[in-house]
Image (cartoon, rainbow, N blue to C red; front, side, top):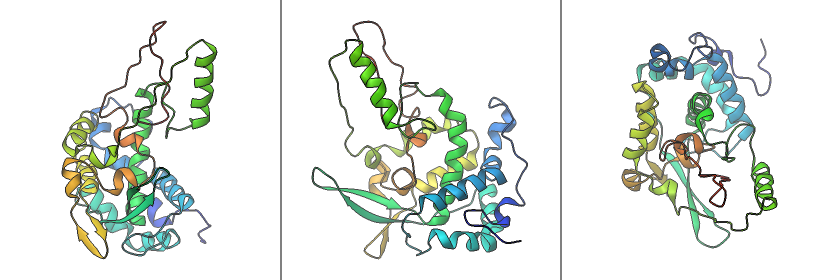
Length: 262
């Protein structure tokens, strides 16, 4: 059987637990077996295609997205067993600096391709469970939502007579968000200790810079890892977690909300 471009290898799809997508989110079994849903074949196939489509630079191990399929054919059974056993250990991220338009640099962490694949698989599961709990006024990094929709909504507010716009940005939020606070909020929704341990492991994976691996010291107070910064949309790790649902005030003459991001 020839593996077509963009398709996950059979080693990834095969040997996984049956799909749990149809089970209710309130089921204790569903909650406690969240890692099985992460390792579900259909979920992995979607994650594989997304990582392939996103491309991206190699990390500290030098593996490219084109190498991922062959690597998973050989190593996925071992990786899957580590995930299900709660002992998977992510690799340190590669530190890169991206110039900001207004000056200065933004520090990003690039995870290995394998870690990106796993992160994507976890994100998809959390996304399915959490997206319906987010404010309808939030447009950033959500399925079937875009910045263009946020602009259209803002234009509608202007047509309704609103004149003031408050633009707020939290400086270095993803660098400084407290890990313990973040994980305590995630634990309110995720009961599978393996998934919690995996997320914490990504946060504490460390950083490779100038050929040296160092712990994410700022991450003990904040972040600095690729889990939030370099692994795709960040909202499903923070949105609706740090500050709850983000209720809005929509009474006449008060405030309406239209958020592009966090």
